[in-house]
Image (cartoon, rainbow, N blue to C red; front, side, top):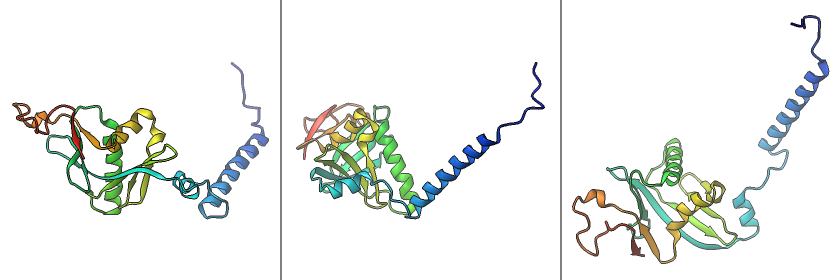
Length: 185
């Protein structure tokens, strides 16, 4: 085994590491306190470029007693989307869980509407007016973006199965429990 007891660590390496840490702190605090310009956010860029809204709708999300997540149209109160427990809806549930936590921190109602907006530049956003938070849904990938995009389908909303509430299944053609039933707006 070699003995390193008589070797010294190069002091210049410590100087370089300290310089990098110092520059990083200067930049972070410079941006934080407005001395240096911050990168514009996506909403800032859209506002500056006057990007048009293609489609927008407000939804109120709520949990049902059996664990389903329901998205109701805020204007009509009708269900726009029902995600059953165990369905492939983890992204929507995760985003809404995060928004609910933020609402708790801001001490605002958890039943306020959120706005889903499709922009002319292809972006899809979710805005919580009660907290001011905007979620850029495209940054989570195409599949996760599509989970929220289905809420803005032109003229129709897809409602997944809610047959678990009715053990005998649908009772009429107008029953909302049909799998994949399409409701007109």
